[in-house]
Amino acid sequence: MAQSSPSSLPQNQCVPACDDNTGRPSGAYEMASTISKPMLAECNALPSTYILYLDARINELGRTIENDFASIREKYATPKNPIVLAHGLLGFDELRLGGRYFRGVQYWRGITDALRANGIEVIIASVPPSSSIEERAAKLCKDIEEKADGKSVNIIAHSMGGLDSRYMISRLRPDNVNVLSLTTIASPHRGSYFADFLIEEIGPNVLPKLYNFFNGHGISTGAFSQLTQKYMQEEFNPKTPDVRGVQYFSYGATVEPGMFSPFRQSHAIVERKEGPNDGLVSIHSAQWGTYKGTLMNVSHLDLINWTNRLRFWLWRLVGIERKFNAIAFYLDIADMLAKEDL
Image (tube, rainbow, N blue to C red):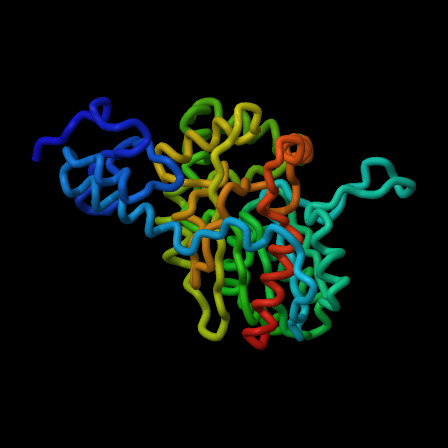
């Protein structure tokens, strides 16, 4: 079937037809984060495969969350079981760069304190920052065993932490760790094309030398190849099924990075192959279990309260209201777990 040239289509509204076998795009495409039905109507010259694909991308956002977490509510329910916070790639629990006399830098910036202030028992896991999923999952398991005192737990995981948690639950199956639920936040369950892109750009000749250099300086490199789409979809997911009795929830996010955003380039790379994303992880990849919705205009780091405070200061100057408060978001997840009797 003849197809229109992408250059002749309305900018940021049209995409190549889907691959007949996968239902995914057969090449690069341009699309805005949200597309209205009138905009779709303007693409009247498109083959039906284009329109069906665009409809699928819109529906993939699920429930769009724009200002539900703009501010902290007065009251949140408290889950009866501890919450484990599992960090992502290159993460940590707390860094004390200035010794014991200065406040440390927290991965879960202000989130841990807010949860504990609401009466929640919080366990912070600390796994090897860039090690393989297997190594990180083993350390996650050990942390829970040592800190949960035999209690059942709910895991909230950001980014790669969701993959560590899935591996631990499904493959390690520790006898003395009972996971009731796993809530993943922008976890690359189907990989991230940005990982594929970096590995392809570095190339097979240079990559082993780069790995050897980092490994020689005590920096593990096991994580990087495991975050690719190929590994996640062909190796990890088929061998890591969900476990009966564990409830799985997930959130994704999408952002349109500004000129000076650190995610400007990575966002464009991921968007070409996977569509709307938070700068590193696409909405499609973030969905696992019960998808609770897509956080709009929220970046991968905004999700752990590593926000650009200069940006919000400038917003206030021009009267733009901040629509996402990460602390309100995590308190709401805890509230949801409490209402699920977890």
